Image 1: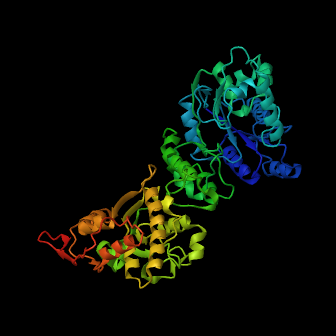
Image 2: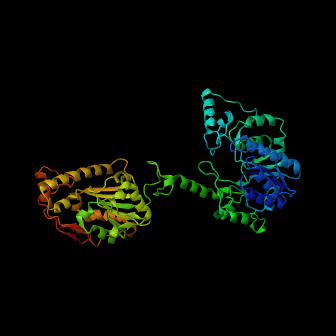
Image 3: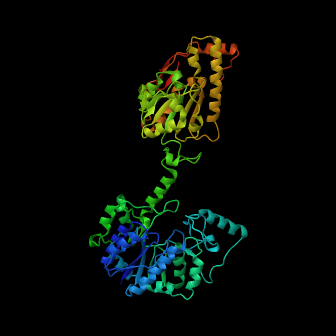
Length: 566
């Protein structure tokens, strides 16, 4: 049992020569076709480097092997004919490229094929069953004509396809031929290859496939069905493709991954992968596995890689893959909490929340003057500055950068109607956001001001309009955040019950009854303040219904270790 290799070469000639010497030195005939685009001086040096080896032949004349055209199939046919003529003892012919690299010892491949002397290994599926073809042509690649190059004559290519479709032009397939598609890289028996090359209708088939799009994926794949005794519709070569149909390139750090596939050959190998070439170009019997080639064992990793390429990591934005609206992979990378009105209702609320939950608690990150980072930091994780101008250049990116740079640690920050409102829709539509709102709590700051009634009334009217619009967005049907909204009057009725509900979600692992209450700000006279605003014509309704004589006492614990207003 002997196996011969066909090498289609167009670049990295030094690596192709290295692989050819390995196979030829292992007793396998090698027939090489070099793309006519390779300059004569480079080709001559390449041929000279392999001269004198009786197991190596070169195809002459050379063909132009442009992607998607007949030249690749023509070169393969020429090389196959030379292989069968020059090496009569070859029982199997293995097609490979100059960027291929053997993964297992040659004796192991010989033994594997000897056990299957009449089996052809070629991926061959009917066009109705193929779901991996890219570019929009499945059946049309056979019924239309493609005389122009997809890569170098794209304008002519597209216009001619459009013309054929517009005129309803279709051509008939050769009688009895069922078109099949599959990987270009195959291993065929001598009998099947001789039958394909000696078919009396070969000229008819070649004329037809010369106008097929990417015929190297269909010529042998279709004709093998007419002549083979047994077809294993799979390739012995590991070749993985990305979401655009382009082959993955393997590097030095893929060594163990390649070995896990148990395939005999892999493509496409980076020419500078010295470790791969030095490790795999060996017939060391210690690496013999006698295992069935199974590239499916590493499919999970490639599926994950494709998903990562298409969707990215949740909450990560980058120049090479900035997401379109509503097509991102998560707005932020992790959960965060937004508190609105709490720092107005409670004294030193940020420090109390940080101590209680262990989270990083910031002040008003979107305040007009600057971003109030925890601890008064000027520059925060990810080199985020506290500059309001830089923050407001892209307020949403500011938040995603903050969550990404601090991933693994929940961020909490204050928000209110006096802040930049641009991130409202972003936070509302973010499933990672937890938004807790006490409407009207901002009025407490106005209550503390020593200002004229007219100034307070105008400011109250402005802030109320902003908060009403903000709350309306939070209540939109498309909201995905975890949102809780209370009026100030509602929240004060049982503040610790509401706080306990929020904190149980912020730190679920450490959920427990609160034993220390935040200090409620002094609201003595606040009810009268609201009534006076009403008397002057400003109805501050977002705070809820406060009696004019409302005068709450500080929070006190009851016997159940819960806190109430007494």
